[in-house]
Image (cartoon, rainbow, N blue to C red; front, side, top):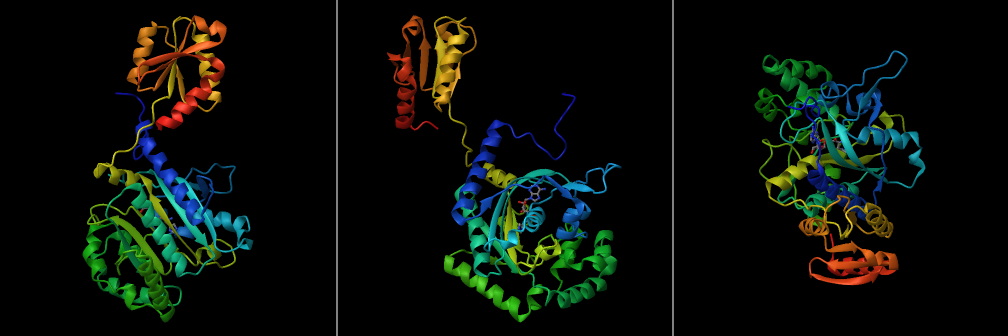
Length: 428
Ligand code: HAM
């Protein structure tokens, strides 16, 4: 047993697994570029108040799952690790006066988030999200555009059967009347409510609908639906979002009970699931409109919408469906030598090739040439660069390990020869 282990709820993403993450990050970057979202990064921690005010005090994410940093006596602020990126991105948008940029301001963040949750399959204390936000557009067209971009991410990542669950959770005009109905309903069942839910009945009744407590499932199922309380403007907005999705050919399922777990949402709310996996497994991603958040964090009011897609869960889904993650390519060439002791020459030649952008390994073990070549073949390198006596005249032997051929090449031409071979053989 090793004395130290990665903290509970975290994982070491070893090279084979990280290669899968990298691929997803690359895909997120490519989609962000295609859809006009500019990548940025924000601190991994913020003033706790950014999350408390943005996400809401009486939410699981803030009340139970926030990684709070112990406050030093000399600090007047308290900080917490980011449980998501939206609040921080909006804080940055306000801080840097991005309201003056042409709207919508479309931003993308890819990176780790932290939630002190109970670890289980697909639920970690450090996990990775791709977050995309479009700030300054009231929709409805941009709503459909964001949702379609999310679905395309899963399609291009290779996750089959991803379903969109869609709802509107009303706005400042119609939500208060709905919350009153909701409160009255749950108040009638107060004795059945778990302690936390009973408290939230007063502070944040909407949260009773996305409670993780199994005792709440049936009760929440019988609650009044927000869809019956929409005002005219919310009804029209939702219909227009649907019309845009229909026109794009994006399929979705209406889910009148979907409310999401963060307080900043208004109107459009959506989640991505593996088909048939709702309930047993958590969402692959989710998002929605948050028209009040910019103002809440001190900015001039601006409507906004976005999503957060969980990369860990996408990789799990890919593992389950057997879509193999791609491994790194072998080196194009291994530099070996007739004189086992002459590591200097092998390093020098490798360094020269790497400077030309080639992926090359230098054999630094002082073993017989035959053994060096054996290792190079085993790792599926295409070429061996063999250094021998000809180096004095500025030549090396270039052995094609796949074809079994060998010829003398001037050192000055070596990089060019290898680069040409790399191109014609599609290495990687
Ligand atoms: P969220 O629904 O809290 O939304 O998280 C989005 C996604 O992050 C989830 O659907 C899930 O895939 C992943 N996720 C969340 N918690 C964990 C965990 N403990 N372990 C593994 N994966 C997890 C947000 O975070 C919003 N900021 C999304 C958004 C952006 N809304 C508007 N803009």
